[in-house]
Image (cartoon, rainbow, N blue to C red; front, side, top):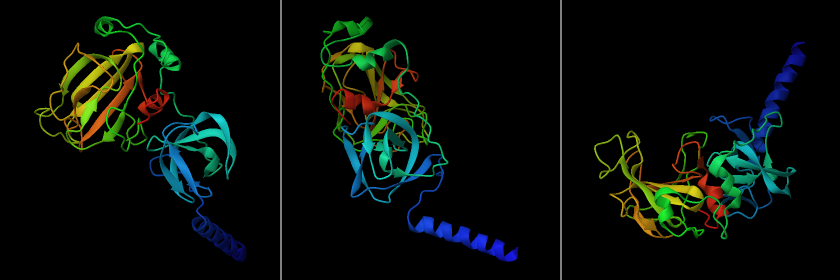
Length: 296
């Protein structure tokens, strides 16, 4: 019995050493995501949306470690070095990799990603967004400009993107776009300004905020055709626009700062399928901006 037990302990130890040597994934990471290992010849593209045609933001080498939050179904099956699948893995940074190249513990199920759009009301317009039509007529202040489908553009120059509702920040209803202080922030599309506000628990939005302060700092909301609302937070000073202004795509709204709940200069950018903007109608700006032809 003692000899058998000794061999059993030795076998477990050797198995563990082999897994470490050859890059086998562990079952889970510290933040609760499923751990995996990239298996690829060359490199694996990390993309902004769950499609092979979406923009890539970085590449992962073979045996790189990843943390998978959830999965979504793509529009095509991909044959990789691990499996053939149409599933895409959302990582903890909000980006996506094809599950065809991710090796992980088969006994650990990866949950499906929760929808990022609400199933009724203005969210029904999401599939209809395009250059030719406006699904939802604008009402109130937003009706003061010509209701043509706007062209979309980046609110700030291309940069790294902090994820939408990640495991570590499930309350994060937008994405963070780091930029130098005083970088112009522009309207992502034509619309009407419906909110200009200082939102902070600190003494003022005209001073730098901190992680210990609550609020969006100086921010602007713009309503676009289809009743889509975009929000721009943490401006360095009072915005350049006022409520009721009709703005064009690319028009300056304000400048990057770090007012309110912020640890450094950046734009916090949100997209909402509705007006007014709420937590319930917030969607991930990354696939949305990819969809309208202006990938972040």
